[in-house]
Amino acid sequence: MVFDREAERRNNAVYAEHKAALARGEKRVLRKTHAGELHSYPADEIGFSPGRGQAQVRTWWGMGILTALMALLFVTSWWILLVPLAAGGQPFWGALVLTVFGGLGAWYTFGMARAEYQAKKLRKERGAPEPGAGHVSQ
Image 1 (tube, rainbow, N blue to C red):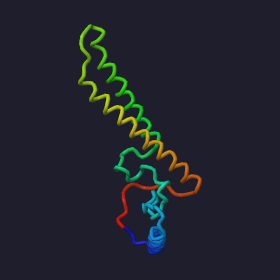
Image 2: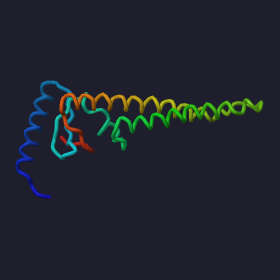
Image 3: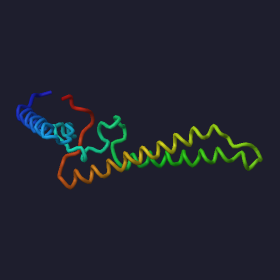
Image 4: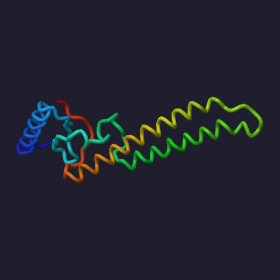
């Protein structure tokens, strides 16, 4: 890796600006962009990627797919729960674990997808770069 004095100067300037913004009471997140440069993002521009739980899915539509899978698990668990009733038996109460997992998972992943969609929209409006993966130690 080659040391780039100009990139280091820009990163130091962004870091100083970030610290000043935090001192003013602004909610900011310091991240590297996909290009490897530091950028101080307002909290509403960060969404869930990267950082919020270190999600492996990095797009709002990817999280939407996970939401759909969790919703499918929720619906399927109700089917598993109620199928024994058709045969005159008792409901399969163990399926309630899947119902809770699927319902809460769908709710959580939908919230993450919505947050990332809104953050991506704000970054596009403001001309901010896409955040890269990982945290920056401060």
